[in-house]
Length: 255
Image 1 (cartoon, one colour):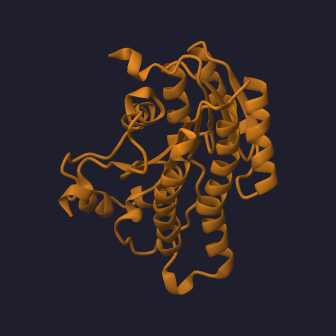
Image 2: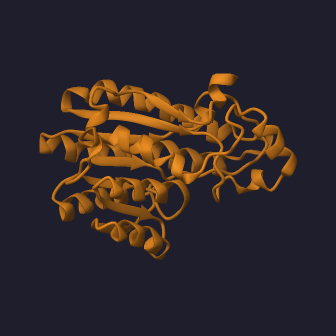
C-alpha cells in the first residue's frame, strides 16, 4: 500500500511554511519523498523548515515572497519549478487573520485578509497550474480552508468570507482543471494552537468551552495534518478532486 502514498520524485511548493501548519506540511511531504520549495515573507524565518526538509534527505528551496505580490508570487513558483525541473504539488497555506468585531472591521483589514487568503491563493494556483499543464503530467493543488468555510464564527467575518470563497474556488478550479490532469482539493483544519490562533488559547474559559464541542475532546496537533495532505498530494487520491476534508476531531459532524 505504501506505493500509493509515495511522493518520491515529486516537486512541491508550500506557501506560508515558516512555522506551524505550513512547516508541518512541508516536513510531511518531504518524509513522503518529495523535494519541497518553501516560502514566507522573510527568508530567515524559513531556516528551521528548510533544516527539517533536508534532515530527511530531500532537497529544499527557500524563497522569500508575499502571496499578495501577484507578480512576485508567480515568479517565485516559476523559479522553484525551474530549479526543480518541474512542479507537481502546490499547497496554498499562507494566510492572515486578525480578530476584530465586524462593526470595527475597516477596509484595510478586509483587503489584507482577503488578498492574502483568497486572491493570493488563486494566483498562486494559477501560476502552478500553468506549469503543471505545460508539463503534460498534471498535478495536485491543496488549499487551506477552515471551519469558517462552513460555520459562522463571531469576530472572524473577513477571515470566514475569504475561507468560504476559497472553498468555492477549490470546487470551481477542480472542475475546470480536471481535463488538464490537475486535481484541486482542500483541507479545513479545526482548532490548532498556532501563532495565528494564540489569542484564543490565552482564554482558559474559551478552551474549556471549545473542547466540550469537539467529540475527540482534544485540540489538533501538527502531527494530525501531514497524513491528509500526503493523501491528497499522492496517487492514493487520484480520483478525488473538488473536495475539502475537515481535520477537526469531529467538530463539524457534531454541529
